[in-house]
Amino acid sequence: MKENLSGNFGNQILYDMCVVAPKHTDDDVISGKVWLIGRAYAAAIERRATGRYAEEARRDETKDLHRLIAPEIRNSPLDHWLASISEVEAVDEGHLPQVLAIHWEFVELLKRLTGRQRPSFASKYLHFHQPRAFFIYDSRASKEIRKKVPGRGNGKPPAGCEACHNGYAAFVRRCLQYRDEQAKARNEHPMTPRELDRELLQY
Image (tube, rainbow, N blue to C red; front, side, top):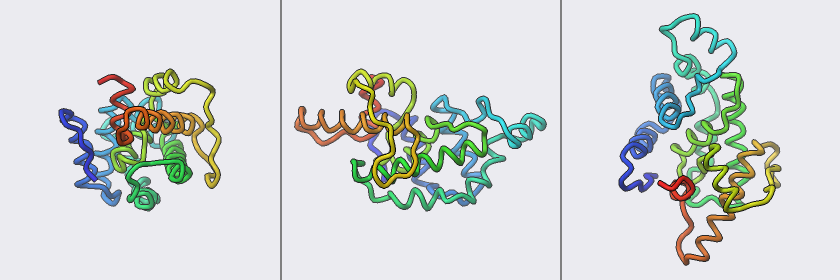
């Protein structure tokens, strides 16, 4: 599914990259996607990485962390996870358990590989593969959605979801509430995750 990003050439390149090469079956493709999305969104996985792959990359300057972990991602169920939500057109409360569970599993995979959970990178990487299903999460977007939807929020796993990243869960629920309220107030179709991100960050 190709996201409409009129006037945003850089992001469209990343979307097109994941349309052309959506699968995680080739280590070079995986490495390239992790590298480009991470660097483009100031969420590089090398940042404060620990563990054996990080140590290996530090010992040998010819080795990059994203290349070292690519085989692990290839051998993970990531493609299965993404395929399970490929038909989502507009994420809602019904999709929430599955979306949060996939984000959590990817976060846990990244933690095993880099020593850190990296929920922001996870949301961005998953978003470019399934742009209708995943909201783009980082400190700036979280701060802005809290202004629009104040209160403590509810980051507990919804029914049917055994585990989630609490910060991302609360963020997504605020995004859904704000998106639906605005659609009703404006008498418009609900914003996509990208359109909401544009509004939150004012670009």
